[in-house]
Image 1: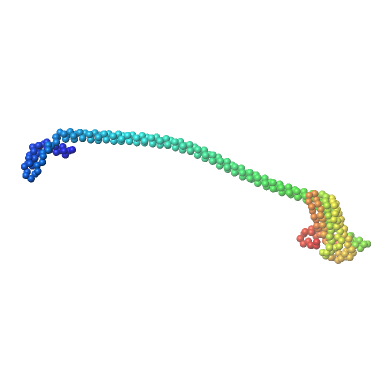
Image 2: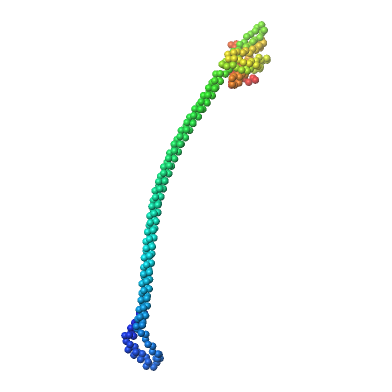
Length: 293
């Protein structure tokens, strides 16, 4: 619009010059003559331009007012949002602080309970160890008591059992019959009776059993301190051979019962011609005992 105003201003400033120019152009032989148009009224252009300018200024001002309002509204909204976030953060922090304190209290209580449980566990272990020690001691005492009881039982059995054995062997020469009689005295050395006693004697000359051994298969009861005798008779010929130093021995066996157990007895006796007596060689299960049965 500004060029139009300048153009109008130029026309308004020098109308005469403009007319002269028009007239000059009319007399130029080479220029085509065109119809003359009346210039627009300068006042009409000015009114139109001013109205349009006022309208645009109002629109611009309104837009600026609207933008400012939007900016203010956005600023207020942002402030309110910031305040809301700050308030929410404060509440969250307070809640977290409260939760953290409560959690710390809970953890402290749990730790205290754990410490108490640990202490109880330690005490229980100590009590279990003491109980185990007491049980071991009781077991040792029970074992010792059992051993003492077994020893007492054995002692009782040893002290209160019958003992059958050879007390002595005597030989007697009968010159009228030209024989030699040998008596084996067997005695119960124990404090209690021997029940169901069976006695046997086996005589050997140079390891060969002599004929007709004398034995009592069913002797019955032998009370404490009582004696029984086994007698063997040998001819003069046998006696002379014995006197010449041949090996002559007797094996005595006894089978009997006590109050609770059954017992066996076996012992070897050998004749010694130098002293003219029998002497014991020991039990039949001794090392080096002759295997003559």
